Image (tube, rainbow, N blue to C red; front, side):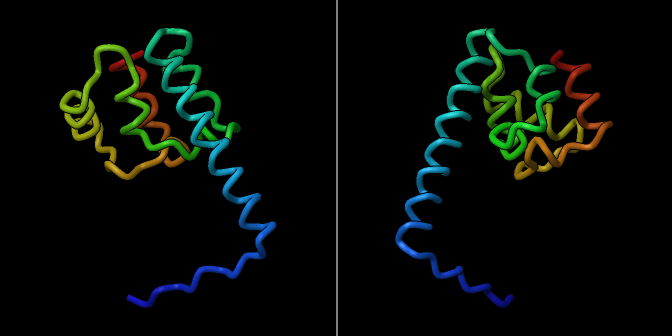
Length: 105
């Protein structure tokens, strides 16, 4: 497998990329806290794919953030529905999204 070289970034571009990454991590952490304490629902998240932080979040982290859903339950649900562990929210198909909402919504 041939590796692609990372683009050379100027110090300013690198600073901007790091700042954006930090903002995305913070936003995803806030989303996860909102799910955990009930301020946000799964349907709200799945209907917010225009938000880059949500769209690029891994489904496994999303499910583990729901109340009373741990690692084992998340793994079981994802296997039942047929969602790969590395799948991101934006990559869910309509059937998968519907199955998640039916099971957890």
